[in-house]
Length: 186
Image (tube, rainbow, N blue to C red):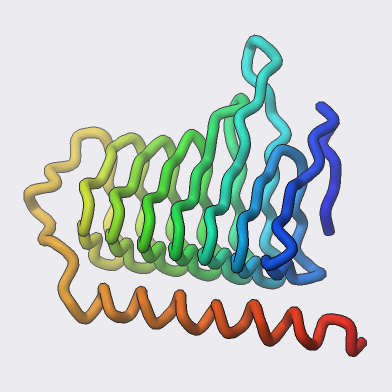
């Protein structure tokens, strides 16, 4: 469902994207071509800053926002999800936040006030709050990264996880086309 927010913004969704009918897209949201937004996802840009301004939530081309993901932003801050990026089931991305290109965010992960570098893999059940990650970074499952975390304790992305990320993006591109094709059959 696409909805206007109280400030009057209505989502801009590229016709090449697929938004599941159970998803809610509200406000100053821009969704580019070949994006998959799964069932029960909520992408909501409706808060303003002290000046009454609001930056968009931008989902760039070829990305996928899977089932039950919540993307929101505090006080009108921007959220950017890069190209060919996967945000897996039930994750929360809360702005201000930038997730780079070719990134995989694992199940139940929470991101807030962070910048995730291109090519990074964040595995399931992680929390990243207040510390930026460099490119090609690998966060193992169930890690909490805060402002004082020593990133030297974690290695670069192993090759098998990078190829897994690419396969998830490819699978979701097929889903965009498949779901768009059957959308009018019901």
